[in-house]
Length: 131
Image (tube, rainbow, N blue to C red; front, top):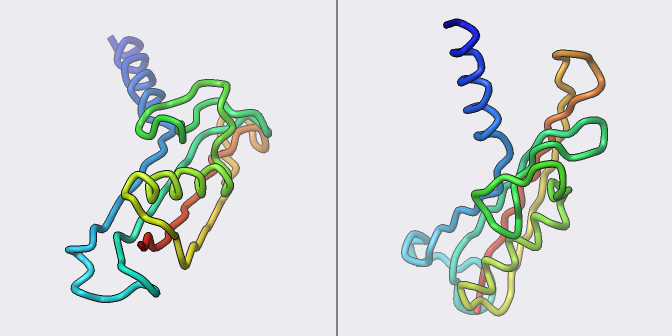
């Protein structure tokens, strides 16, 4: 029974790993504040993270289909791909410019099961969409 529970927990954990997501603070939430020249549309935050074996992706979030996982194929946990996700979201909101783009990225070595082989990488990009 313990082995079965371990397998189920492992499968659920693997399915929950790696995610690309976008959060949008619409104009109505900005309390009338201007974000830049022009009409503010929204403040957008895009995130992506995943797990790597050395430099090769194992499980990553898909920037082409946010909210889904890409297995062993899509090396999308990097700033350029996350900026692409941010600007595509701004375009979908009918924005004509994105200002004040800020980005962070991190890579953390996972010491289990063998140190220096597995890494969790993440990126976070935010910006203001304007007309």
